[in-house]
Image (cartoon, rainbow, N blue to C red; front, side):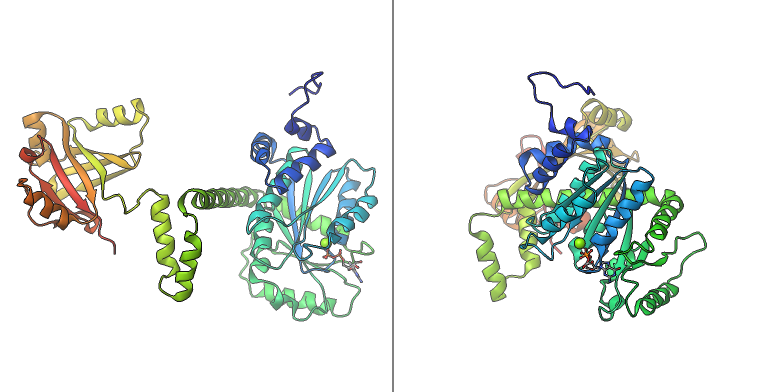
Length: 460
Ligand SMILES: Nc1nc2c(ncn2[C@@H]2O[C@H](COP(=O)(O)OP(=O)(O)O)[C@@H](O)[C@H]2O)c(=O)[nH]1
Ligand SMILES: [Mg+2]
């Protein structure tokens, strides 16, 4: 990428971020916080340039001294000339702007140091939004070339656990004298700790707290090669213990190379799922839930005339286009094939469809290969024995369309309607087919030469 700006044409924000321009970085994070439409494109453009930074999460109760500690740690890391980006997330002070003011004060400690970028995240995002915004802000700093990204967050709820899951390693900070700290910490937070820090070690009870964490760890069955979280004591205000903390971070980083990759993979999976869930919810909100429907649904749930499981199932079914108000849909088309390899090559390789499942129906001497096409699918039918009806069909009529299957709401009602009209049926009564579905065939002589199968999905 060119370092030289084209005169007259403003350079793209992502390029400026990649150059490490602090104003561009700040702007990019603001766009992410505001969930601005450009944010998605920005994150996408930066993504290929991420993965270089080491992400350290530091969590703990409010007032534990996290910010002070991060400051000290930043100074420590700067001694070896490594650059540090800091993201502070504190949902416990959403209105005061105190975090912002604090940042200004903190900024001054590193003022004029181009190797440090400190930013606090606003908390206006909806549930889960904060974790996403934090993750994306970390990606911005990562892409901007910071060696370390330190994410400070209050350890109180799921959102914060989610935030820490973003990190390559997690430091859990506790302080003496805040009651039964270890028990008070959410179990989820304790489990993610790679390093424990007992801060305010100058205070009464620091040794006791450290001992109780050690005791808790003693109950864990650590394997010989497994990382055992060390319990460190720090005094962030003076910086005592901070070099030891930096050393522990290095030790973890060195130890956990293989684990690191699998952790990133877990993290990637988590992000992907989270992203998908959020996109899906947006879709449900925009396209599935009708105006006023949510309120009515909630009323019915409150009255106990509807349960949330059924309500969710109904919305899901509509979101997936399985709206029950559509009485007849094409379920699949059965195609008898002579040469399955050639057929698969045609549908998969030439048409770009995917064969998702293969199912053997021994009783019928047939193997079915399912090829989804939109809402329905093709079912490639391969005879497995010479006695198979499919083999007979191919023998007599050649390979090709074997049957079509229509899915109906009420198969008995559909059969009755057909009978009333004098349509010839193969099955007067539905039979039980695959997965408990009810099925019945209409005779081809009444269906213009096509074997028509009706099916009704039976809900369990
Ligand atoms: N006595 C003592 N106070 C500390 C220590 N570390 C931080 N503090 C103080 O604890 C308060 C909260 O610190 P802060 O870093 O804002 O905590 P955070 O909410 O976890 O980010 C501040 O007044 C700090 O000066 C420490 O090691 N000893
Ligand atoms: Mg703080």
